[in-house]
Length: 379
Image (cartoon, rainbow, N blue to C red):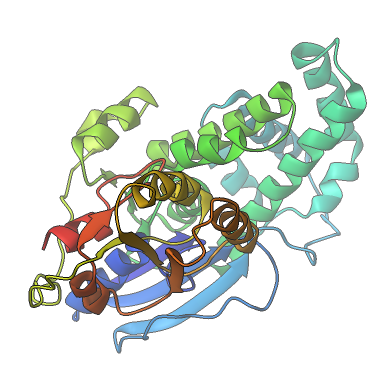
């Protein structure tokens, strides 16, 4: 059996709970052959695997979401294909799932380049949707917002050119990974499994809530994300969450309850065992998390100030810095609150050893499913 793992900005290029989960899965299924297809946020060449490549992994393919070098000449785009593409873009704008059948029948396993966005058919589509959706708003804002999103969507259609043929496609999230898996399933007629350790739409809403953009723009991006998620659920044969709360939200977003199969997270308990009693005079409080906004590190720093004003305690964050801008924001807050000697960022380290060093584990995330750090700390 050959399985193609499809990831978005996670395994095998970025460390974290989801990546650890995927790595354990591949390690345990020694008799299964794997290909790994990873979608990156940019076309930069900095993305390299950070995990060991197991013998049962054949290919690791890393491709950017936004492509600077894309198909410019669309060739012959029939009227039927133009209508199918327009419907795809309209569904994305309305937050409803895509329908790939007509597009696949028209273009097979090829893709349409962004040159189509300069066609008269596309222009007519933009004018008609503008009059329907935003007649009193700025046409310039409408055009450039949707042109950007539509450009990304056409880039996403090119995933099918890169994704290997497999017996099963396994997307590690909904969103673009699920979208890519849905296209691959339609073209190659192989079943699709989607695992949701975290909820894509919840995380996108959290990101957008911190951005200084208009409410209209925020709404459009949320609808776009909803379309990706609902498309993933529509084409998935199995949706695998780690907890009941995920199941409830998936169902509310239109997932067929009969497709949902919960599998609880587990860890290698022989790796995470208690160390000797510390019996120190000063508490060490540890947060094990990537340094990214959704992990709520700024909230932890504010809490640390309250604790340190009352008790002799130090804080450490054990985890890779994956958002340098957010890390700088955290460092400035640490300095401002006078915690420079009390609050440290360790970076990527051996978590199993650090659990034995801390007295208290804490987690400050804005959103989580069943976090591995919590299970490891309990172990």
